[in-house]
Image (cartoon, rainbow, N blue to C red; front, side):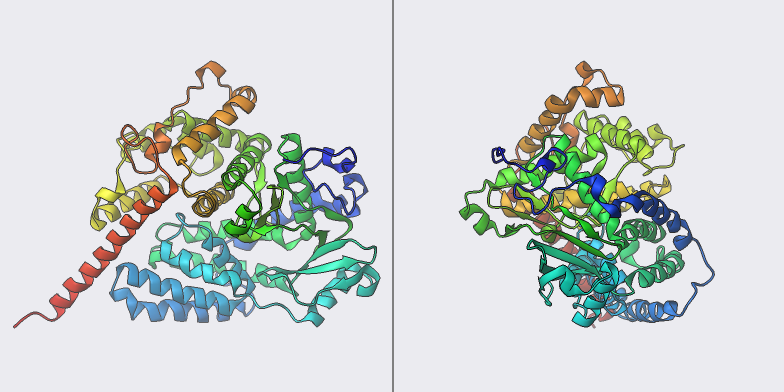
Length: 546
């Protein structure tokens, strides 16, 4: 972290911002902030109505959705479904991805969220949805200009001395343009697509109506309850539709990092005045693309430190302040020349009230102590399990305290049986994935991939131990007080964490990301071999020798 300068901007006391301020943040002097709390309240109150059961959604949107998704499922059902296995999952995933692209911003956004959910959704679906990340064409400049002038209430030339008509990036909800203000500051301008809010609300109603019909009918929904997924999506996307909420998220996360003394992250400053429901003007930051490993290393940046910063900063905000960036991916952050990480795009932000924050703390502390009952109790308090769940029975039924099963030693049939047993058991206990937990897991999946690119030889077990020790020594007293734990009783036991990788924790004490990738490839090849074997057996059955 660079040394603080004598002339450092005054707002560094309240936020982890850049050292070169185009303007100084003074929250009390930002008029757009006056309505943020009421906007957030209204937005959350709308969700139950959007997802409530209906005989049929209003409007004609339902017909287009049913036509596209129905055709996708129908063609799969009469074709690849009969082959089963990977071919079946890959075919339905491809057809649904194509349907999402035809249906526009809402469904593309859903696909983009799924695309970074490896481990939460089937591999074939994640791979297909990743193709949606760059499949959103930009709006016509005339439409963008109309939104800008309507929201800012004045001609564009009165605000900007220059604005690039070609966007830096075009996403499902908005697109971003480089610009220079009339007052001389270089900025980026986030502009919402015309009519997207109305379309999103109509689409969520259609999704909520359609989701119950998909339960148990297609393989990609086997590990996720479609109605619960729609609820998660509605909660996630609704707050993205008002950029005043995103600008406030930027200030809140910047303040969280500053309060924690975590200066290895940089948050762009939102403009004091140029923030509206559909336009967000912010400071422009520059750096290396997150996956430009060669450029980052050539600049002398310690890539392992970058990964460590990501892990600690993301977890620290959640554990101590109950807030964290909810959509980490390569397009939402870059590495600055001094090694700090710039975070972008705060539309999706994890926020936990005090009760959920304490449950989240108990979950992580329980994991660090290999205390399975306390972890399950924390899951319950986070909303992942019903409040009256019998934790002891759940541990016994799912054999959660048994020895770890190494998936590389199982056949495909044995592996599928284990997965189905666990999924069936979880669903039987009413398990679901709350928004905050889904965002946390999704971010951990991204950081997992970041290790592959930036630090493939990092010892995962040693790093987990180091990070656990960091939290114990830096925040141990506060964490213990928050959850009512005697500090002397906080006995680190990472056996369960190591076992979660599917290895014998007594025999395997070191595991690099390269080792982990080799294990995953062994598992994938076993699935491919199993699918090929089943196809050969079916062909022999259909064409017996004479």
